[in-house]
Every structure is written in structure tokens, then in C-alpha cells.
Image 1: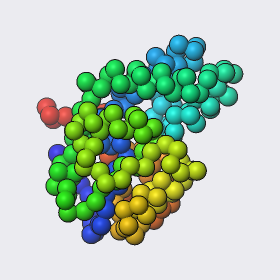
Image 2: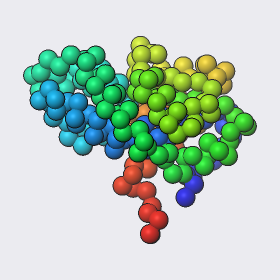
Image 3: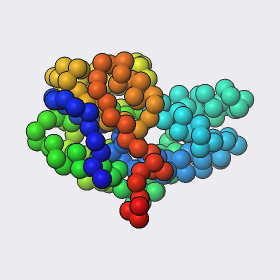
Length: 201
């Protein structure tokens, strides 16, 4: 099933990566659970999804504060990425989004706008064979303010040379949609795995 889009003409498509282009959220959750568990830290699936779109350092910093821990941010971030890379052979593209990438390729420019590290995003897109489809990558650390601030999407529009009001954002996370709204962009929500229609149904 192709994902329905809002009515309008758009000059660029801006995609979140994890959970939007790459069906990577289940893999990231497993990697998080293992990496954090090695430091005695817990992360519920509910909180994991609520924090979707936030940068890895911010997540680790807040978990330290909430659970009275002193996890080294860079070490845990590297461990999470290492574990995620080990799971990449299981990665697939998100149904309904890939069709739009294939359909609009060459007609309008694409950007990735992600709260994940450039290394993580590049690894995911390379595994899917999609890295060369995107003209711009905006990743963690490229903006002083991450989602839900509008800065990452505005930066992508600026780098593409497209008016923000002519961009369409593909997002699966509330933080990302708030970011797109704050940037004055149209958006479409990508359903979470449990909300997608099944082949049997």
C-alpha cells in the first residue's frame, strides 16, 4: 500500500530516516536495550518511542539524570551503533515510503533529516541501497537545536535551495512532526509497524 500524501505540489521531499525510510526502529530498540543494559540502565519501549527523533547524546544524558547513572555518553553511543550495525542484515525499507522515493526520483530533490548520527544514517541507507538517492543529509550535530525545533528541516531546505513552504516531510515521530510544523512545512505521518496493514488483512 502506497502512503497517501497531502494535496499540493511540492518542490522537495524531506525524509526522516529511522522508522520512515529504514524500518529500523525495532533494531534500534534492541541495540539500545543491550547497550544500556551493560551499564545497568533501563529503557522502556514506550519511552523509546516517545523520544524518537531525539539525538543519541541527549537520550543518554537524560537517562543518566533520571536514573542517577554516570554512563559515558560517547562510549554508550558507540556501543549502540556497534550493536545496530551487527543487526543491519535484517534491515528493510519501510513499505509505502520506498514507492514514493522510486516514483519521484529525478523529478524533485530529496533530503534525509535525522536525529541519528551520520554514521548510523549512512549505514542504514547503504544497506538498503538508497544512499545515492538523497541530495542532502542533515544528521545529529548539524544544527545547534535538534527536533522538535524547526532547525534541521530548515537547514535541509536551505541546502536544497527550496522554499520551506514547498517541502513535504515524511515522519513517523511526534517530535519530527512538531519540527516540520514549526518549519512551516506540509507533512505526512508514516505509520509505526504495528499500525501498518498486514498482507493477510
